[in-house]
Length: 623
Image (cartoon, rainbow, N blue to C red; front, side):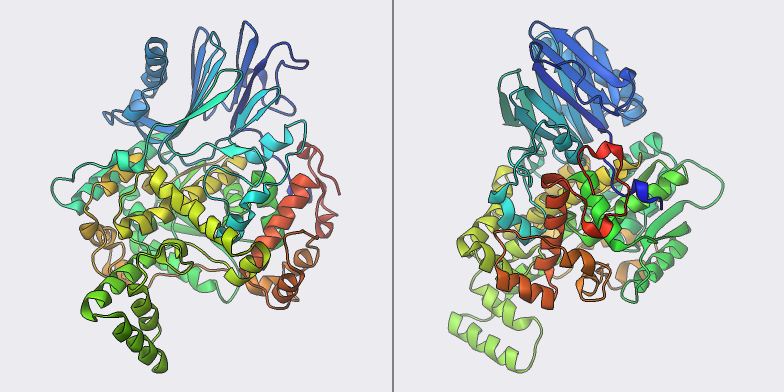
């Protein structure tokens, strides 16, 4: 890998600004090192100038007079036809609807998309992200106007002043390794939320929640749930096949990616040779079984599988991920997605399919914890008897029964840190986080993610809330971050389980059918059994973990970066010392934050990467 390519900023996948014409330098903002002028949509009317910068080879645009619209992703109007079949008519239809009604008919649109509409006559901007909307959209209001875009790193580096770190969200960040919801690590720089419409008139912005998960829910589905899932996946992948017929599936070998593959085998056009699949390969004893897991699935499903070896230092992948997105990677695996996209682009493969989101839709592991606690509450009456049972179970060394018995008494205590609502997709060192920020800040951090459930009108059924807190607070964010990493290399990512049609269906399935007792993802497994050997359905699920603690320990690949962690006033010295002695998740989150702080706040490259030539696009980064 050329070291000059290590730290770069992307061009906006899309981005723009609405501002007052009287401001000096108001014309053509964000044009430095950007695309050609043909990729600008520009409107001048009265005292306003509106700009939208796009990549015309992927972003779909249309203009009628002083109105321009861009659609990122894919959308279907009224689910009447495939996205491509209606694409030529869709954007003009949306513009005509806006001209007549001064609003967008977002409730009639399905898929996974973001829309930007410029009204040059009114000096008005509309940004809308559908209820899933993989791919982030960011915005910030400045004295000069509203700046927005799909790449946080580019947006921040385009600002005249470096935003301050958002210290209010740090407890949540250290709990989740990512900040869920609207806030980012930058003060006053926000994410557009799923289902949210942002209106900006040149002076002030207004946010409207146009869609929620609860709003998608129907009274129920007719017929068998498995049949409905099959039909919905076929429709989604038919659209993907039209848009990118040669997309590869990121086949890990699990139920989710295997299920996508059996339907992709049908949806993709007839071509010579086997369908292509791929995964990243990390050469370590702890991860080699992952390669075997993927290869065995590829053999069973008849695909030509490529293992893409990670042949650069892990520190390079981590730093490049943060520098390119402005976001800390919520999983170590996230650091490989740009590397993988670069390999696909080199092979002229423009898109990939990913199974993100299936766990939260069809049953995360914490669902079983709730089910067991409810069973024990009915089977063993009385708190004292259950506590006695927990003590006895501990003495005989039972791995799960003690916690299940105690959870039976605390199912309503959703504020407890070990409640299933707070444990979904959480890898943290709670003692270290509490020592640095205090117990009240930790409680507020847990509450921040739970608040998403009320925002999106998730019902009171605990199993629903446990699963959708992971969906809203982790799965959607992961899919969006990975989409951004792919876009940096000119590739697209499709997450079929993060399509609003799938969400609408799943939200309408009776929870008792969707989460059968102690059988997570049973609906998806039943569907996969129709197409694939049972061994793919019944074998143990792999965690796909990475040896992060080993890499941060003395002699590990990340140790030099760990030892360069700067001083941060929220870190208790004894917590840092203990984390350095015995690496934990707090140290990993601190390492990512430290790299983020150096790259975007201090605007320097970590010393261990000082020999790397920094791209001119980095705008202020220096060794």
